[in-house]
Structures are given as C-alpha cells and as structure tokens.
Length: 400
Image 1 (cartoon, rainbow, N blue to C red):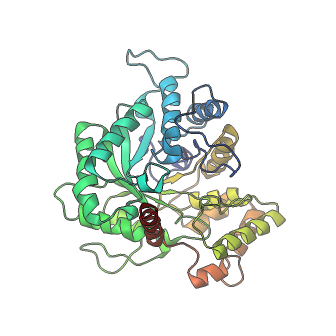
Image 2: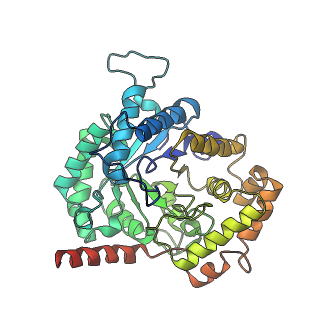
Image 3: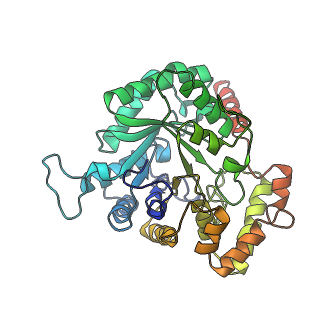
C-alpha cells in the first residue's frame, strides 16, 4: 500500500500516518459554520491551512498517504487535496521545483458509495453513480489515477447482491481503465467485510479486493480486529481473527481511527458518535486517569495502535501542522525498533515508565476503566444496527 516501505518497518510507522476527514468540518464544534463545496475557496483561511498542512506532512515529515472520500466534508476533503497536489506534483512537462514531488512517491485513496448529508441521498451503490463518482474524484483531487478506490460503508447497501451486481463491476472497470491501481473495502462491521471478501475473492477467477480498511477496531477499548476469533476462511482449519483472514487471503490490511473518532481524546467525541453512554463514560474515565498522571490519552492511544505489527498502515486524521508534528514525533519513537517482536515487547521499548504504568491500569480487565464495557460487550457498537437506523430514518422522511 505504501510503495518503498516494507511492512513492519519502523519507517513505515511514520509513513503510514495520514490526513483524511480532517479537511472538513466533520469534527468541528456544533456552533462552527460548516464549510461546503459551494462556499469554500482556495483563499479561505481554513482551506489555506489544510493545504499547508498537507505540504508540511509530505515534504517535511515523511508522510506518504492521503486518504479521502466524497463523504468527507461532502467534497471539501477531496478538493483540498486537489489544491495541494496541484502545487506539489511534478508538471507534465517534467519541470521539477524545490517543492515538487513525483506522483509515484505518494499514495492517494478515495471511496465510493457514500456522498451527501441528506439521508435520502447519502448512499448510492449503483454502477452509474460509482463511475461518475470516480471521475468527479479524479477531477477534484487533480489526479490521473488513485492508488486505491474503496467501497465506503458497504453495510449500508440494500443487499450484498447490489454490491456484486453494481458497485464491484464498476470498480473492476475503473481498475481496467487505469483510474485506480487497486480496489478496497472499508466499513465498521468486520463481519460484513468478511462476507464480501469470501464471496468475491474466493468465488471469482480474478481477485476483486486488494485491500481492507477497518476503523475503530485497533484501539485501547476495542482490539477485536485481532481478538475476535469468529471468522472462517476457505480451505483453512478453525476460526480465526479478521486480521488473520486478510493475511490468508493476501488482502492488505489498514486500520483507521486509533483515537476511536474522538472517544480517546481529552475533549471527547462529537455529538453524532454512535458509541453508547457506557462506552463514552469509560473513555472519559480513561482520559481522566491519563490526565491525573500527566499522560495525554491521544498520544498513548496512537502509540498503542502503532505497536500492532499485524497492520501495515495506521490512518490518523490530522487537521493542522501541530497535529502532524505531534503524530510524526510519536511515530518516530519506533525508529530502530524490531517490529517483528510481540506487542508487549514493542511497547516496553517505545513507552516511558509513566506511560507503561498508565497503560497497564487502562488495560486492567478487572478494575480498569474499560472493565465493565468489556464484560457487557459495549466496548463497540453495532454497525449493522446503525445501518438499519439510517434506512428507517429514510423511510420515515419519505413518508413525511
């Protein structure tokens, strides 16, 4: 997924950090005016800051991956990346300036399927919508191709058949046309991704999915990406984790949202976050514990996520240069570390003594802040149920 970086290398830990939905007002406070594709411009103060953040991340901090989607800011993220790449990429005439890079030196990912804020227009997995979306994203991002195009939140599709008959043939055609190098899938419920991977990759003459992006399953309160031994893989004995399934199927695995979409921060999650009140409270208690020991919970959560050697790429949204510098400095703690070692051995090396002590208390399954949600199963939410809520809302809106 990241050309030039070996999976598991310390350098990969830094290169794998990414900018994404931060180039929107998704995580802004409720009283901030939203920025839209209609009112944004290159000269807008926020947009100028985002563009400079991308330049700094790529030119000065070794970050090589930009992950975006039409859904992020409903277009503002893709347009912002286009502004930045139009300045950064080598011109077609081959002119190379001091601050210009070749397209092959970075990875750009986008998505299809999820679009508008209006619930009635939010999802469209049809063939024509997918083809039109990819072409629009290419224009917005000022790219001739994407490295990966992912199906965005397939759990919201009306059926698996819709994806297999409409979305996937469109993406295969995009790959054939050279509009993308690889096809991926991203969503919250691991079971939905697993069903698609088995159905498409194992029952097709050609590989459909090259990559899987999961989110909120590689963090302090939810490690089900590795711990949930619930999945079967064709021609393999016994049940295994989703991460192991990806390894068996040669599907490259990435994990996003190491801060669990704001849960593992001092400021807490946005109002739209699907976490239960019990999980919100558990994360708030964890943040208070960290604060009492002068440890930043977001920094500790990122270090914990980066220590998982099964994932070659961790995606973290960063909205400004300060956040890029903090994240990159944390990632550089892994420089020179043998990432083939076990997780605990890696953490013993990269964490301070205070951080190790706090982490031990956070992960205590008896009296730690997450003990109750681990026991009750509320350490995660039901992604399929969230999709059902969405379609129930759509139906109610249609009925007035």
